[in-house]
Image (cartoon, rainbow, N blue to C red):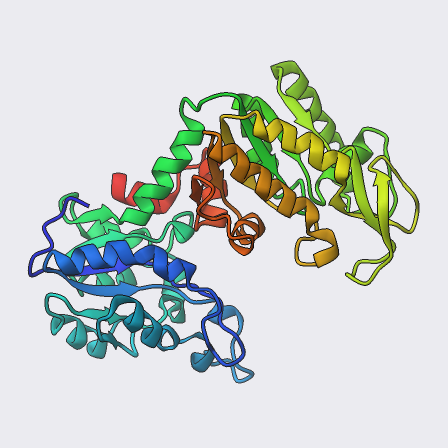
Length: 400
């Protein structure tokens, strides 16, 4: 962030899309805390900060009369907490753009902070509308994008707005810089062996990632619901486990490609299986390729944990995206928690570890291991697309 912020109004795109409970209270402020270094740096260097963010999907969850549910999705809900975090009185604009927003923006002085209303209250946001982006750009002298979590969206506030600032008037924030640098540690000349741990429900969600990883990883560990598509493709009996029958050929082709590249593709030897999809179901351990009808695999088993952990602990670079089981159910969270511990142990022995993706991030956070891994990404979908090799519009808009 080598911009001169003194006496400048700085438009900063942050990702304050935080979870709120029924009382509209923030339940996890991780994303807000991640943006603090950028905001504080601008304030300390004489700038005034105008923050913009989205919160939820208000255009898809309208009131019955077709109007926006302002009460639920307004960014006013986060202002008091942001004031506490920054120890600065944070002002709020009930508009994203318009006369009121423009008047409030013009009055922002060095050391002051203004939060604009939810960018997604405007339909023009998602379409990347140039007129809306131009109005946003006119609120400030400089533009900083610190919202890695939305960098894969070509929205007005993340991408289009940047074209109204020249290369000396725009920059990444510290969070964006850290996300890019840490992802590049995995992608560019990583220490080896490199192990990728990929979980989650569906192969179809991770096809591009798996194909890319097989090109450069030494080990690819597959867990979660997606493992059963691979197991069935190899002729295993998987009972009522989650499966994508239209992806069986793809699974086999990925296994073959890994073999041809000399990449070790590991599937769970055993599973914790249940007779129903709930935490109170009967459960037991079973060979993953011999699951009886009426039973389903909901977590990796003890042998798989030992096998995967051994590979992880012998790795020098580790990428983890996605849970090993139905992590939100306590009886089927052991696999994910054990992998989190193995990643932390490998990190303490000198490995570089990058954790990205909702449930794997939740696992390291819940276990208090977030400071025991090298980097925890704030951007699930964006990190996934970056690792797949896609050019993210929010990054291209700054880099040109």
